[in-house]
Image 1 (tube, rainbow, N blue to C red):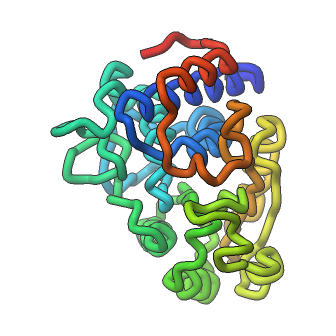
Image 2 (image 1 turned 90 degrees about the vertical axis):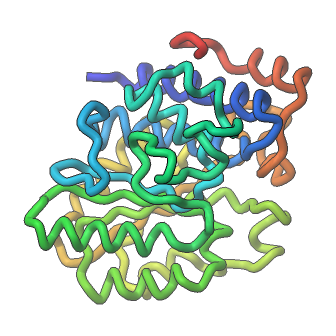
Length: 281
C-alpha cells in the first residue's frame, strides 16, 4: 500500500520526466502537465489500480481514464510508463518521428493505456460518458474518470455532454476539471470567462466537489470521497484548482508555459528544484 509520501515521490519524479521530455523534444506543454502531476499520480497509483499487463481497448473489468485535454500527454506518458504500461526508456522518444509517444495521445500507434485519440478539445467527456454507459449495459461496476481543462470548457460540446450525462443518470462517471485559470492565450477569465462554474455544474445536475490539486493528501481524500457518490443517479465532477507549472518556480502560475519548452539552462534549473526520487529514464 503506497503512502502519501510514496505518491509525492512518484509525482516529483513524473515532473522530472515532463521537463526532460519536453526539453528533449523541443516542444510540448509543460505548464498544465506539471500542475496535474499530483492528481494523475494519485489516480493511477492509489485510486484506480488498473492492470497494465492485460490492457484492452474497451477496459472491461477495470476502471478507465480518459484524457480530454490531450496536450498534457507528457504527464500521461510518464505516469503510464512508471505504472508499467511500457518501458521507461521509451519516454526519450516523446514527439519524435515514428514514436508511439506523439504530441497528443493517439490510438493508431498502439500505445498501451491509450483508449482514444485526444487533444482536439471538447470531445473527451462525450467519450467518457459513452464508456460509462457501456459499463452499465455490460453490468461492469467499474468507474470511468475523465480529465478536462478549464479553457476546454469554452467548447460547446462539453455542455451538451454535461446535460446528457445528468439526464441519463450516468452515476459511474467522475469528471475532473483542471481549474488553473490559464490557457494558451492568457487568463481564462479574460479569454472567455466561465462564470460561477460550481453553480453551473450543479444546475446541470452534477454532484460537484472542489479540491486543491497540488496537495496529495487532499487529492486522495477528495477522489475517495467522490467514489461515495457512485450509484445515486447523478454524475460527479471535481473542480480541481491547480497551479500551472507547479514544482518549478519560474513556470508557476504563468500561462506562457502552457506550450513552450524550456531551454537547456532552464531545464537544469527546473531539475535542480525537483529531487530525483525514483531514477530518471
